[in-house]
Length: 398
Length: 112
Image (tube, rainbow over all chains, first blue to last red; front, side):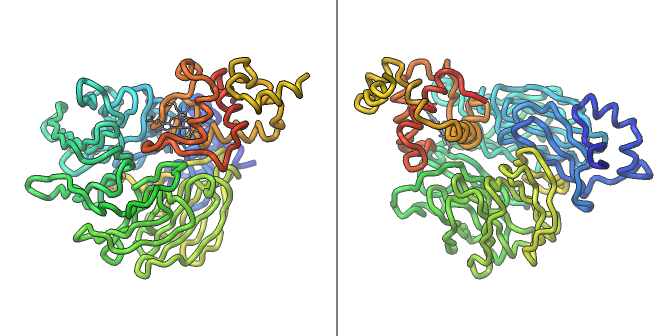
């Protein structure tokens, strides 16, 4: 019953409800922090849940966010606002405390995620159509800059792997063109753009390490990844882990892997291979291969517990009912279990004591203890996909 | 009468497609399987083509976008994938009949 009262059925409803006593019940003093809150994407219904990860309960639902397949979120520096990037080009600024949409714009026809600048003033969105990156003022979502991803004879490329980098920069990768671009906004609203061409065939995603030093893009069209050391005087993309597929035929990939979620442990980090049922361990100093782990199926996310000791892995359709946990020092699988069909995403609490899993087909978010692997609770959610905790606000690249 | 049609479709899928035999093929899939296929297309094709099928990493799968291709060739792409590109082959998870059914529905405007 109590839960029912908190569920806001629309942005309008939420605005009304904001004035109602039910909200005061959530925080008797009328005040609360946001550091332990999470935004859970309900992909099919264009809504998000706002959840309290300490109480393990839903505080409210905000609707009207459009097509949220493949949606992701970043957070304002004060952790009050989430910027939610929808598939349909929608960019929504969500007020997490008031549980209302503060501002929403449709900024392109088809998009794939975004990033917020280190100073928290710019929000960038990566677009498939029209291919490029659009940049907005984080306060009011007014347009600041448009960066069309033009290549060849005027064609526009889909963009992927958009991240923020220190120095008010955004870095992204051109899927069709095989290029990496660095857009530097340190001098104001007009970026200076550095282009790196011929990085390889069909780069599909990228990550930046949380020290802001290494940008790594995965390639679909060839074996290997591309690495850029952004601390170098003259950063250049270079191929790493070339030929990791050993020339064997790729297995079919029913869902593209994500590279985000890496973490350093024992001097290496683990990334999903593409077209192979393996994780690749990369030596964090040399960027050479440091081993492999055979896993259940095509890995999608390989997310490190924040301390880095374990990596949790989920898988592509039709094996997406399974989670495996890898012990990083020994590169061995220590746990395999099945939370349910379409376990799409995993998010660790900031210090890693719990992990939250979205189990889409069961309309549920499950909470697990990361040391005992015991299930601690569950929250109802409509076709949940991404789970984003506010602590992301303070990590480079998230 | 219908039985004959279905037989013919199996014998000559090309001719069947020309004669809009797709609709007859549909009658061979039970409603439960059809619902599963709708879910699969929305959710799992949707991860690359968008849940609304307006496109993502893969192009749009809306009637306008597929107007130039017949159901048979669309079904072939579904079953065999696009070599060298992220479009995977669905043979093993989908029968030819199911792929033809999906192709036909995509061309008409895919059910919710």
